[in-house]
Amino acid sequence: MQAFSTIYHEKSGKFKDPQTGSLLTLDEAVCKGVIDPDAVVYDTKSGQALSTKEAVEKGVIDVEAGNFIDPKSVTKVQVKDAVKMGLLAVIGAPVLAASVDFERNTLSHMAVKEVIKEAREKMKHSPSLTKMDTAVGVDQLEEYFPARTAEDMLKRSILRPDDVVAMPVIEVGQKMTLRTAMEGGYIDVDSCVVVIPATCVRRPLRQAVIEKVIELTTVIEIRSRTEIWIVEEITVITEVIKSLDPGVMAEKGQFDPTNGKFTDMATGKQIPFVKILEAGILDSHHISVKNPITGEEMFLSKAIREGIVDPETGDVISHQTGETLPFFDAVKSNVVKAVDEKVNHEMLMKTEQKIDLNTAILKGLVKPDTGMFTNPTTGESMIIGEAIQSGLIDPNTVQIYDAKAEDIVTLKEAVDIGIVNLETCKFIDPESGYKMDLSTALMKGVILPRRKSMSLVAVIKKGLYDPKSGKISDSFMKQKVDVDEAIKRGIVDSFITLCKDVKGDKYVTLDDALVYDIVAAQHGKFRDTLKNTLMPFDEAVKQNF
Image (cartoon, rainbow, N blue to C red):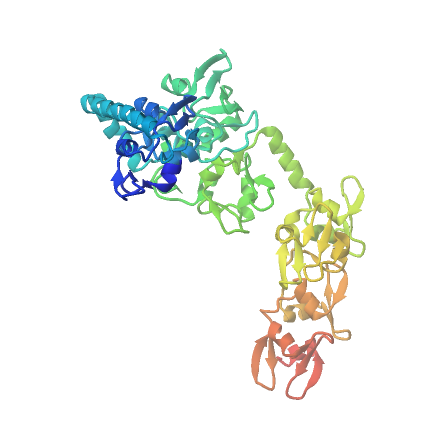
């Protein structure tokens, strides 16, 4: 490797003489003693240890530039890159020949020179070799295009590492179409065997496709990366799995693979994703979607309602990162998949068992003053942290107040930024580092139910404001809080409420009014900045302040 790290000139593909600076071919570098012919290289594919001389003679190293020739793909790779890729190893004697005995060097140089000369002569007089080099070697040297579709994979006699996009964890018994298995990296295309359960006949995958034993739209069951079984029984699930194959939809005119859009099979015009569901082309109650943030699996219909799947495009959206995953890419990565009847029933039961925090509080299942939750099915009592952790309370309906950012975040975001630990059921104050149970956090108004904020005027009109105490009622928590706490809990929206600066004769948001002391939070009153007097909020509303 020393020759390639010190004297190899990448642009010309030649070797630089360290004494004269002139560029040399491999044979010239060997003849001049720049490269040691006895340096040993190890061809990891054949398991052979070869000298530079033998490597040239056997066609492992190119006679001109000293490139390694990959026998699998017939592509030329620089030796240093071949070493990095694990195709070649350099061992034994040093590559540079400065310290090698002169007499041995001279004999070796002559021998290698003869080998190189013979190799060149063979290339000149071998039309097939020249053709292969120009048709395959040269083209592949310029640029290699990885196979991304199942069709392209089958066209190639053998795949390269670049053709494999991912290697996901497989579940034995997992069902999908052959296309999804290939393009998603669930199986090893080159070594996979297809089994026909009825006859126990086994065929290599490529042979099975050629013999039409299996098609890309065939539903298969994965037994391992190297063995798949054809699913022969036609059920609701096999039909759903087929419907999740882009090739099937493209053949029916329901999907345009060139632009990734769903289309009307009658007119060919682009249509919204929800129209595909309305037409019954995809069964939303037998397709599950994994929430990119929480990992929760839900029906496709619910995923659309919750904004996880775009109703126009079908893209799966991560609201945390803002990234989108095209629908069929989500199928390949198992984010979207068909669910069998058993899983379907379990998901339905799980959906029915979950209760949102708002409802739990309103029904008395959660006691805000103790932070305890009562399981409506069993009557068992537990702390709210355990109820969230076990999935009895829907985590998507739980919000956390981040005092450091002065903002309300989702439970998932709170876990990600480290202010909630669901394993220990603790809240960590981002400013002080103080830890408290989630039950205490609920009592202190740190854990919040999801609700719609309203203006201060609406709060007054709903009778939630007490003029005597100046406090606002939190109907969920059964507590009375100051106006700034009401903003923190999401009861009052400080940006849609306007307050008048009487002295300046202008309106400012409630948020600014608190800063400029136009609203005295501790008293729960409005300040007339011209007269410097306080009045209850309800009175201020009457006077249009």
